[in-house]
Picture 1: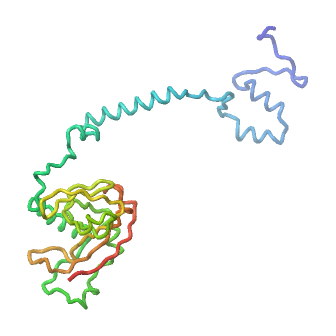
Picture 2: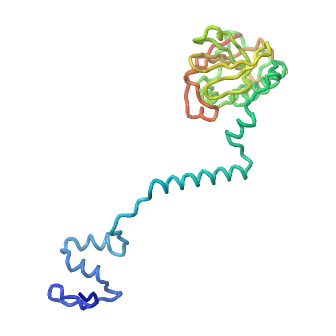
Picture 3: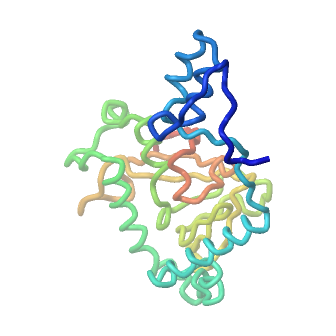
Length: 253
């Protein structure tokens, strides 16, 4: 069979094809009924139609590509001097020198955290005359607003206390948070000891000043006490923005 021989007549007509009247569109228009011709002009004309299924990439090729991308991302981090988790563990970045577990060393850190949290929560300045117990409700900030901001706050430097725990020996343990992970608080106690407090199955109390600290602030100033439920707080600080916890606040004078 000669592929270059003239085409047989279609419906008794012999067609002459050129770039202006290519074979496929002319054939389709001649074979399609008039009711479908409009569909061809709107959906197929001047469009690229794929007549075969695209080739599938092999699983091995996808794995090689993913490995190559991970290697490239690691090289980019290395160029930017960003330390990876494995390198940090090898260098002992997260190892705490227990010789530095001194309450007096971290007390200034707690003082800085108090100023930071007061600014983050937008607490009012401390008045010259403190309100009485009956007037506390008039100056009490919205707890809903405090919760939304507190859940995003950094707790390194705050003082937490174990209120309830499955392990009764941990109840009442209190200290300054020096490192927070997804599942634990590392604290330095007043006895200059480093303790690890698991979050699971424990309830912690967190005390905040009612007013922004000032040179005249005293330990007897009003404070707001929140309860942190460890089971609902098992997230890193960066992940807490999308999480919620239910606080129960009390006031101490």
